[in-house]
Amino acid sequence: MTTTGPPIKLSPTLDAWEQQPDETPRRHGQFVTYRDLGRTRTLQKAAEGLQLHAVTVRKAAARFRWRERAEAWDRHLDRLYEAGWVEERRKAAEADARILGAAIGKLAQRLGTLEAQKMTVGDFIRLLDVAMRHRRALFGDPGATIAITGPGGNPLAVQLAEFAQMPAEQRRVRLADLAEAVQRRTRALDGADDDDDGPPAQDEEDDSP
Image 1 (cartoon, rainbow, N blue to C red):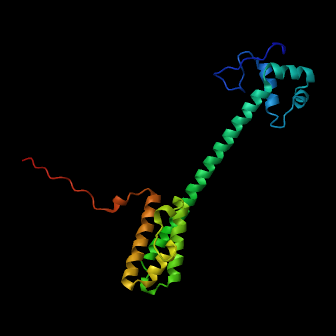
Image 2 (image 1 turned 45 degrees about the horizontal axis):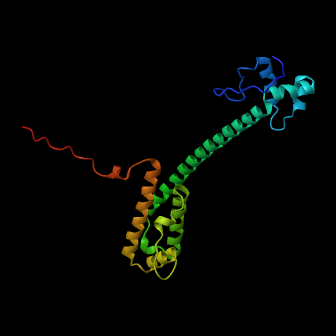
Image 3 (image 1 turned 180 degrees about the horizontal axis):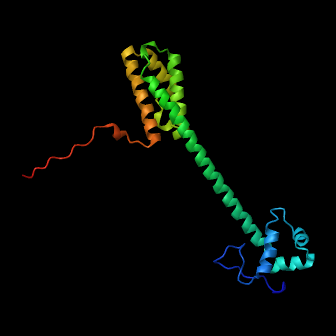
């Protein structure tokens, strides 16, 4: 097949970089040499690699639409590269979630042994900070759902002020609620349902004689 004539028509059923119906294996091999030079490819480099005259290569490139097909190949590689990074980020996020889940599980175990009446406001601040940073890392910014509003200060300041003024028993209740919330997050991370902790359902009695 000569390199003269109008540009070939690309098959709608084939990728642009594949061998086209009006393209011989030899001509396609020449295109592949040009394509695989990468984004810095030039017709001159292709001519040198193919050991062909530059004019011959220019005619073949025009006839078989090398530039257009090479650009389609570049876009294809970009999509593969992006898909690969998306998968790597997903794997990294899953690994981080497992690590965070293990850490918050240890915190939840420790909460059961804490004596609320011995905790200072500073202790509560650090405990709350750990729990909330873990929640944000796993579930995104929770500000729209956990904010505590009210007169006299920002949400966190209001909550800390309330905690500082609570009697010992009420502090224990509040910390128990926090521990349960942390445990629910851990179970959610592990794929468990909150209802799994309930008693098993009883079969209905058969009323038939």
